[in-house]
Image (cartoon, rainbow, N blue to C red; front, side, top):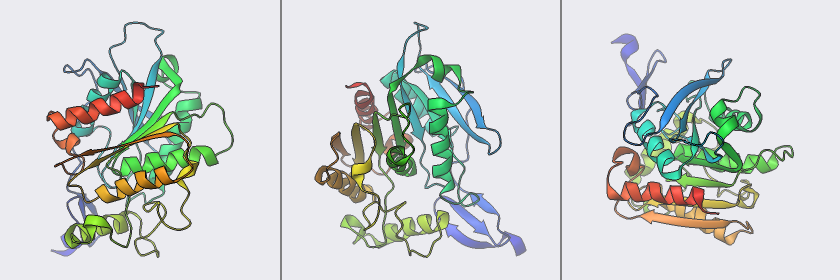
Amino acid sequence: MGSSEVSLEVPPYARVLKDGTIERLAGTQVVPAGLDPQTGVLSKDIVIFPQTGVSARLYRPNITATDQKLPLIVYYHGGAFCIASAADPLYHNCLSMLVAEARAIAVSVNYRLAPEHPLPIAYEDSWAVLQWVFGGEDRDDWVKDHVDFERVFLVGDSAGANIAHHLALRVKKSDPDPKLKIAGIGLIHPYFWGKDPIGREVADSFRKSMVDTWWNFVCPSEKEGDDPLINPFLDGAPSLEGLACGKVLVLVAGNDILRDRGRLYYDDLVKSNWAGSKELIETEGEDHVFHIFNPNCEKAKSLIKHLGSFINQN
């Protein structure tokens, strides 16, 4: 067998062979950008930073007025930091539905993936794209001409929700820049974790161990599974009071192993001195990112409607 022997399994996402080759077992499909006949949403791909290959898929709803200013969704896909892309058919479909519902422009970010590009590279790529959105000289016309920069939202699912959280903290810590303003963040089934089990993690050692493996795969460190990047509840982690946005929506799923971390995030936000508006919505009887896998079910449609309302309510 030689080099084809497996040295590490990271179910259900990837495996590492003895020769160091990474084999991704999911999130590898791609679909081209273009006009979505179901929603009328148009999309296109752009390379933002040729030197790193960081790109994005841009979306716009059916716009009739050329001077119309719309909200902007900067979207970060999930996949445990190691799989998937903006061109994944599941994400492409989800973004088309969200853009149609919210009547918004979207920039779906292709950050580089671990383990070839270990963390914190995904955060750095995502931050660079956010800076480009607000001030890049080579911004695309869809962004320059149609975005209301008072209504920019960071939205993501799973690992992407984790990224949105950290970028909202980083906006406040960055050099004062009146142009860089985040209206809100939408965290869909956020990927937060920790070494010590809480809630349902205590009785579900199988899934607890699986998620531990994911994190150690993308962010090997000496912190034994606890790192402020994945565990915002650690002593010394940045306070949620530092979130630089006016409102936060946290979405969790009742059967998700990550549910209790999402609820804890919301509870900590409520207890903190953060002054923005906050909302928690739990979808009973569903598992992690169910809306990506089953977008036409009523609960998925409801989730997209909640996100659309969140983006459009003042």
